[in-house]
Image (tube, rainbow, N blue to C red):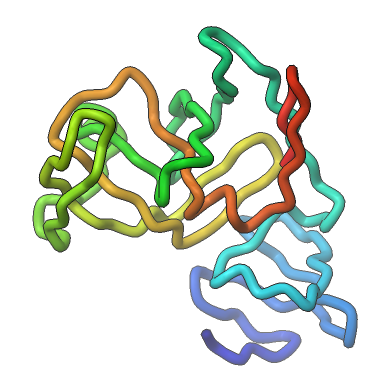
Length: 169
């Protein structure tokens, strides 16, 4: 955390244009938008410029919720997994998008097939639709997976509703 006043540029090149008791106007990656304050702290990161941003995810094949998104600006296919503690990637996706995990802390990862070794990392950004979160915990597993698990290190930062055919963040 770093205190940044109006007119200053903070970490990651985020420029504070103005601020008041309800929020701030920031310039992020050349785009200016207002970010509203909330009583809820998400543990870092932010969602879309509007607190009313929503992403609807339709139920797909196998009864799972599938959505395209990105990690660190690289496109990936996510399967929403409300039972997963973190975002989970296989080594093939991690290598394809250029994640540096080899020197990260080693952990045992509980999977449907038992415990496997893995690496604990932080993703700079995870984006789904108009929602982006920074500094998201993730696990890289040594096995390849056909998709990335969108787990609670991302999902828990949002209110989530689900019907039989749709999930809304």
